[in-house]
Each structure stands twice: as C-alpha cells, then as structure tokens.
Image (cartoon, rainbow, N blue to C red; front, side, top):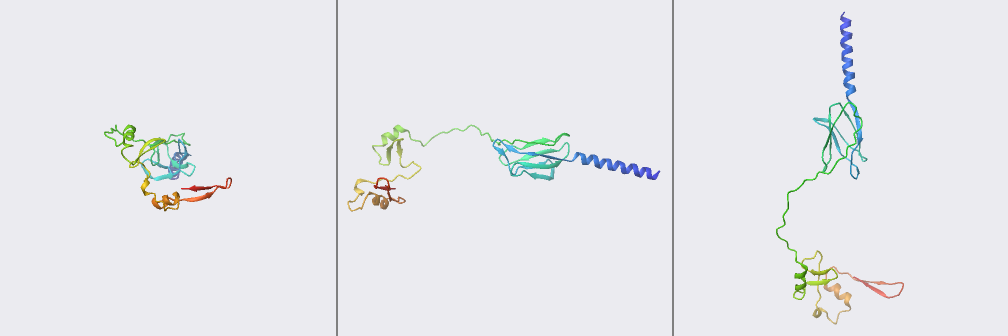
Length: 189
C-alpha cells in the first residue's frame, strides 16, 4: 500500500514536470523595419529580467517562453512591440515602426530673411551685395566667405592675377595645368 502511494506520487510529479516542460518552448523569428532586418533589438519577456536576448546581424532571434508570456521587442527610436505567446505560437516576425513625437503647432514670429527686392535696392548702395546668376546675394549673410578686391588695391608690380589673388586672400591656392591637347597652360584656383 505504501509503495502504491509512493508510485502514485512519483507519477503525479513526473506528469507535472512534463506538462511544465511542454509549456516552455523556443520562439524564434526575424525582427525588421521598413528597410530590412534590425540588429541588436532587445527581446525580453515582460516581468522576467533573466529571459532577455538580442537579435543577430540579420535580425534573427530565439528565446524560450511559456504560453501566456508577453514578448517585448525594444529598439532605440522605434515603438516597443508587445506580443502575447499563445499555445500555437512558434514563430514571430515583428516589424518595428519609428517612434514619432508629434509636436504642437510652431509659429514663426519674425525672420531675418531679406527679400530679393530689398537686395536689388541695396546692390547699388553696398559693396558686399553682389549680383549672380541666382539673383542678388548679401556677402554678410552667405554660408561661404566672399572677399572683394577693389581697383586701387591692384598694383602694377604684381607678377600676375593668380599671384595677386593668392597673396591677397587667405586660403586661395593657384597652379598651372598644362593642357596636353592644345598645349595651352590652364590656371587653376
């Protein structure tokens, strides 16, 4: 009788462990976004810190989970995706989307932009406003550096225009390139 109770207890414990082992299974898949697979996506089970893995170079992952667990797919700059494991779940291929923070309305109250008409009027008054194929450009407001050379700054003792520009303006380099087809030298700046 004692052996029968012991045998029944062992059989019960063995069936419980088999049932528990059947619930724990490997979930795998590939994590991607709109442009392709994502590397280093954090895949974890919600409220279980010990069950965490990261996706590979090609977005592949594998993690052991039970029915009812919630998988969390987390990546910087992307919305976190949560998927609950069901009894038939084996493969999950989530697609992550960018996290966009919608801002409130923005109102521009003033601008430092000068209209083309105002620049056209200033063209005759100020020497740093120049006319180009793209319209009038204010030399003080350009992204680059515009330097001017006045007529009285050109001395007749200079060896040439290239040397004058190289000596007058910092950062300007000049050189001569021999054109092989025509034999005519070409000056480079």
